[in-house]
Length: 433
Image (cartoon, rainbow, N blue to C red; front, top):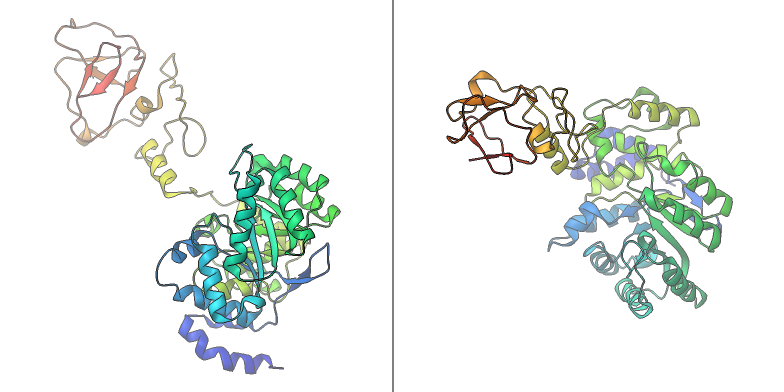
């Protein structure tokens, strides 16, 4: 058996080629991956695996999949065998099957895929199409048995779970389950967990997304159901949230040296979690994730301390589009000028000087006032709306000077500095000319 020093010497060259830091190499040298038993069978699984959505799926669609081969090689070298995929993840399932079979390592992995031909919601699944989808997964993996197939996104459990039960009875599928990453489906998930003989569930769980702790995870422990944790980094939101802040000192007490390791160790610190499957397309990130399943685990006090720390940080925008939308709603001083919440709303808001709710498109121009250097140019003889002193408009030539206008019923404004002109329209609204 290699000692820690021997292993460090052997992997030093490979670590440099992958851009691994000495701290990561040290974390990997702490020992083997933690393994946990599947509650229903006692079979041991490593707590860190690989998901195939997000960046993995993007690379899988390309022609150059060398990076994904390196990811699978890193998994083999470190004993991370759980691979989670789905037919709906683009080319992920097909590409992964091709790579692993070319490597001759298909039997080294715990294959977990999904079934859903019903889509989301209350749509009904076609049994023939569902069986055909399962058969395609068998053809891709080229294995006589698939370790785990779960109904994806709660799609018609009555029909699709029944089909998976048949495959399990035939001995072609070892474990069955069901997944959801939507809070609105947790109630339905609970019912299925209580009434169906599930081996696994797949749910979203992260230090900033702890809703499943209330009912789902305790029920999984009660019913002896394995749990695969998805989106452990808050769909990358956690990394933006911590920014360039250093890893807290107490993380060393559970052998975590990077934020990825901290987040993963926090999840596996819950006893109901069987494995975590973060997605990645880079071998160095895969090794960093694996290090999150090596060494000591955080205590309940550590987990509470980290959760409180994350809750105290500003929540980032989940998507670039939402960030841009919020910027348009906010003025130069960073004030939110539409709706409620940090990113504004779409139903309009009530300005203190207006008796009626102001449409959000117009309201963004009410506050803050424009700088003098960027003031728009208006038609002659401007009028001031009495209900909104901050809004200035212009009259048409047919409007007598001094006429007061009622508040606009509709607004279709598009702000553009510094030259923007407005005129009155028949609907008593205001639009850009």
